Image (tube, rainbow, N blue to C red; front, side):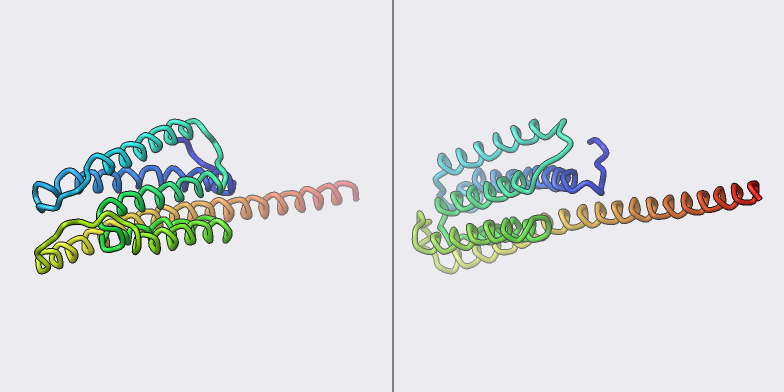
Length: 217
């Protein structure tokens, strides 16, 4: 990955975008494993066709985006906003086919909002938050229910799903925040070095002016 100038806002947005693309692979891998293995291991019937199509489209968009920004040196906040809106939309579609708001994975709508709050202007954060809230609200009314006749087993699976959702969300947010904090520290170090260099230049200029005045005298 090319070295990115930390004091360039456009480069910062590009760094955030690259981190989002990388972290999305973790989420896609986890969700794909759940879609493929849940009917066999957990005896939970899922409409695997539509869900696999959603994951495939999202993965394809991720590949195209990664290729597009590979040799790019800058990005806008709207590039990152579009990717976060894609995440919210894709996850909402997956939840629609797997129980709606009763699916514990619906809590994965929170990481995009947290990432937006850390990296984007207020109006962009409001857009991501509004879409996530609207999707969650609609999923309470419109969804494909999962046939789970055993209530106690459904409760256990729900708790396991909540744990998995918490683990994935914590990993994504922590990884993103750690990388962002390191970027801020690097930028602060560059600013401190620039200030120090400016002070040295001022001192050299002052000494040169004093020497020139003494020579003139």
